[in-house]
Amino acid sequence: MFGDGIFTQEGPDWKLSRDLLRPQLQHKQYESLEVFRTAVDDLIQHIGEANDTIDLQPLFFRLTLDTTTAFLFGESVRSLITPEEVGESTFGSAFNTAQRWVTNRFRLLDLYWLIDGKEFRQACQDVHTFADQIIDRNLSSDRLDGKASGRYIFLDTIAKGTSDRTALRGQIINLLAAGRDTTACLLSWTL
Image (tube, rainbow, N blue to C red; front, side, top):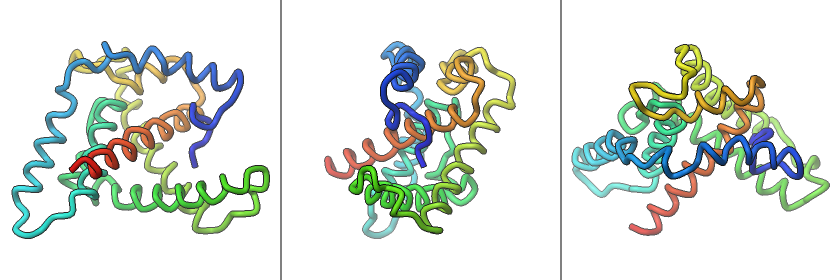
């Protein structure tokens, strides 16, 4: 599922990924908190419209997907407003399924290949399709200067460093996982 990304590589490949990503994750690239405004406003609106008890954890996963995609791609998928349109429910479900399989495969170390199945392969395909659609939509806009409307765009800058779309997808999925899951879980536990 993760492909060749910083979390799945070792040795020289890991160092190459680290060298590619490290400058992009410096504080100066995201010192403006403006990237969070729309997603937080969408969350507040969603909570305000609820007339009953509300489960915040699924909303936090959508919030972090929105903020992560805004940072990585320069535009949010706005899953808090229209989750069906962006395929968030398919992505979220596929991502969770694939992670469950990856966890089980990890436990077997060198024998990971013994755990495989149609459900796992389909989940990986769904995650890859979601990432590919976002990458294609954003790279087709011909704004590979790393900025749009004066804002830093992570994907544009990374795309300058690699022409291999599979490697680009691997890096993006690794960072989507880090940005979505860990932050959403932190918010859930905190509240």
